[in-house]
Structures are given as structure tokens and as C-alpha cells.
Image (tube, rainbow, N blue to C red; front, side, top):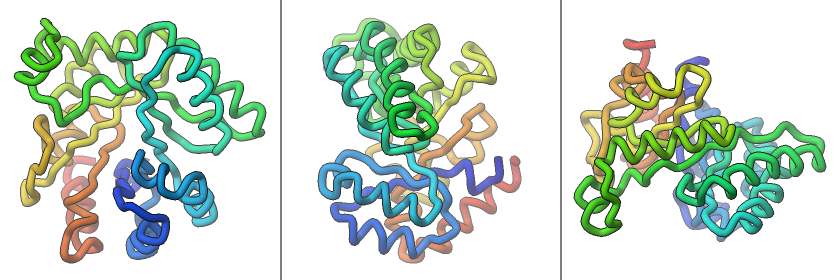
Length: 239
């Protein structure tokens, strides 16, 4: 993959008009993430707009419900022809297994390629302390993330979403064919914001990430085009 193909930029804006303005402001970006706020606001219209511009789509809706509901949602989402789709690993083995079958069914019904289904291991906004004291999970955070990734791999999902700080261990354990997507990536010159477990883009790639999700350092910059170019230049030193 080229450098630009490995960076996913989130469309974390409230309206389709704002999203399209951002897409057109950054024409070099080939891979965009559509999350809950924008999808709830605009519906599939934003996906069609991205398709028209020949962009790749990470539909990051993080499904987490009972198995039949998760399967139905995955089947419906797969019909849009997106490239990546997310489900929480904590939904459990049955939900993950049904979801994997459902994306194939939905894509086949629509005559499109099925999305890569990837599991959320643990939100990057959650710290070790929150995992232990708020969520009452007795495992250390890196071990919990690894177990969620292994559950996803065991149920034949395509990969997992993890923080950059867990990606090296997941790559070593899950192997090269397991897709690893890292949000919460922050260049050294950018604010960490609400990300608790971050690395720089170059560090995350060297640790084993396939894709980096980089949002506010680009989209909230005074000059998004310059910020994008600066990150690409940083990655050119390790790719």
C-alpha cells in the first residue's frame, strides 16, 4: 500500500454538507471514516457521495447488541459496498460469528464486495485505570485487548481495532494476515486530546499497524492540507 492508502481520515462533522466540504478540501485523501454522528445525521447519502468520488470507506458504527440484531445490522451495512466495518468484540462469540456470515450475505445480495469486518478490542479513550475501576475488568489492559483480538481471529473476522500501544503484541500474536487498524494516532506536534494510549504515526506503523486513523491533527488544523502533507512526510521515513 502507498502511504496515503494507509491513512484513514475521520469525517467527524455533524452534517453531510460539512463532510463534503472537508472531502473536497483534502482531495489527496483516499480513505475516509464515517462514524456514528455523521451516519445518523446524513444516512447513507454520505456513503454515496464518497463512492462518487472513488473514495474508500471505513463505516465505523461499532455494532454492539444481541447476536441477531448485530447480524441484521451487519447484513444491511454490507450492502453499501464499504471497505471496513466495525463490531465490538465484547458482543461475544455468537454475535461475531453471525456478523461474519451476515456481511457475506448482505454483500452477495447487493452484488458488491464484502467489507472487511474488524472487531473493536477496547476504545482508545479508556485507560488502564478506567478498565479496572470503572468497568471492573480484572485483566491488565494489554492482555484484555489481546484476548479480544484473539476472539475476533478465532471467529474468523478480518482484523481488529486497537490502540497503537497494543498493536505490536497483537501483530506478534495474531500474525501478518490479521488486519490491525489504529485510531488515536497523534503526531508529536499535535495535542493528544481524549486519546489515552497514543503513538506517533511513524511509531504505530513500525509497531505493526496496517491502517492509521488520524483525525483532529488534520481536520482541526489551521491548514489541513499542510498537516496532511506533514504526516505523509513523516511516514515516508519509515515506509
